[in-house]
Length: 344
Ligand code: 11C
Image (cartoon, rainbow, N blue to C red; front, side, top):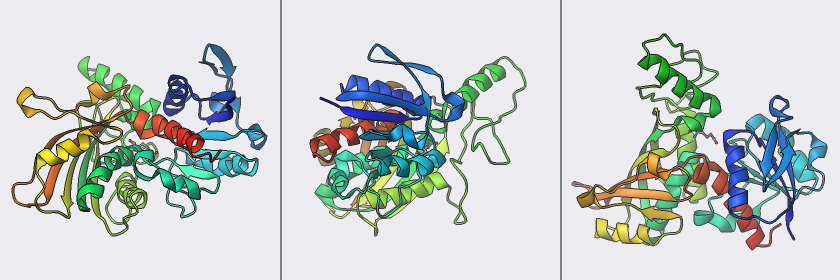
């Protein structure tokens, strides 16, 4: 017994992690269809010891598919997700194409699994930096109430895809060898200016919006409000790219509704929370770091401390593998929830 599953974008950084996660979780699959854009079609991929050839996605590719995991860019999702739904599939879309559509649930299972019940064929997987933050914020909101979130991110280049990883590696080598290197990809492929990422920090992820925030920052703001069903929540974000290959980090300041909570209580709460691993012991220099969270599904939280001036303010440091909980694992987890809730 199993499901006919399609992975769209099977050769990409996230697509590869999706296949790995489906294997690791032993997801019930009776048939697997691997799809991509024309550029990557024909690539051979091994899954559960069987070799598959990745096919070009067409509307007909989705005949008989029950669950389709999309991660091939927004335009591919716009073109093919409705075709998949028309043919009876449930789509879990890892792009930003449908996230703010009011008919599309935006789901992080630890936070709003129940929202899956309202799906109309498409379920959106949030942005990586949003997912890891809300996994840590939701237990705090439930226990103490939450009214303000200010976040600064320290994001890895793999969030910008495989080409950005190569750019970081090639550039680092060139600079260490004293050679010239012209940046071509970061911060944003289509933008006019490109800047060195090796040995640098770039305070721009995705394109600037008219309000002075970048699109990545607006994703964190709008998606957090939608996932937590808190349109009134005060959220602000500054997103920064660092020369880290994988693993996004975030410095998060929150204000809760209650005034008598201690940092120890917040630590105890997060220690018991689903999907969270607490790594917080300054006396032994224990705190999360991206290099240590790569390959792990959890969200790691540490450096929890009370603000010195605001009785309801707390600071914390949140780290997770952006390709796993930020993308592939959250998508597969949604698929597992669909099975558990008998929605597929
Ligand atoms: C980054 N967060 O790190 C982005 C990547 O909307 O799914 C994820 C883009 C998205 O560059």
